[in-house]
Image (cartoon, rainbow, N blue to C red; front, side, top):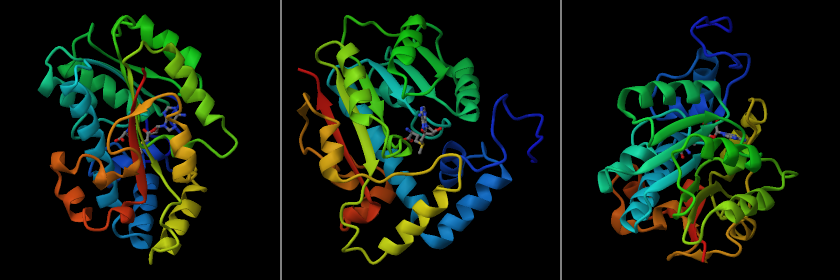
Amino acid sequence: MTTQDPEAPEGVDLERPNAARIYDWFLGGDANWAIDRQFGEQAVKTFPMIKTVARVGRDFLGRGVRYLARNGIDQFLDLGSGVPTVGNVHEVAAEVNPNARCVYVDNEPVAVAHSQVLLEKEGVADRHAVLQGDLRDPADIWKRALETGVLDTNRPIGLIMVGVLYFLGPDEPVAQTIQKYLSLLPAGSYFLSSHLTTEGLDAMADAESRESIVAQYQRSSTPLHLRSKAEFTTFFEGLELVEPGIVYLPEWHPEEIESRATKKMANDPSFVGHICGLGRKP
Ligand SMILES: C[S@@+](CC[C@H](N)C(=O)[O-])C[C@H]1O[C@@H](n2cnc3c(N)ncnc32)[C@H](O)[C@@H]1O
């Protein structure tokens, strides 16, 4: 496909690789273009475990949603939801509660278009929706999410920002943005998140390759910004942290791990370079 691809959704930037489409390629999807695949191949050369790490991230999302659904959460607002792939939030939640609801939000037109196609096939209009929007604008996202009619603000909601906050740069008011969403959510709601971290890098033989990956992403339309555990922890301010707190992905409810990729990482959890957590609004 070329940068003039007539099949690409309107507004898609095919001049530069993009996080949603690169991630789709890492996970074996086909919602990506040559420019994304070249980027992905280069990233695999630099850090051969990168596809496994993407699976570990996806597996955490599934464990988190399953945990929430089992604890009575039946509606989700998934920000930075990505191109649909194995274990989409509405599917994982439906395995526990067939009436679960979900609003997906992504700022990448390809991710939104593919979500629309999927929801037209297997979604139910009053329980599933997708919006194109930028999570950095909570007032707009919240207003439009409520306009879908999918979410009931009288009952707890699972707010998800998994594998997305590292696309917000060092000058962005990330903690305030999250607090804004949390202020809009009813009591008993949850915040589920994961983040690429600077933690453990000194001790890692591959620290250099991870830095090269970050440098590579600076040339994409979606640069990466790693954060410390201390900073990520501030994103959960005012919430009750669910056990085991802020940990590396394979350490979060390991008894629920299903994917081989995550099991493989269990002996060296810091290697995935991602931390995660789940908090409950009192
Ligand atoms: C690595 S993917 C993660 C997808 C999914 N959450 C998961 O964990 O499998 C990150 C997604 O966040 C989206 N994204 C990045 N910045 C965003 C923003 N400011 N607002 C909404 N979505 C964003 C990207 O387009 C991409 O689809």
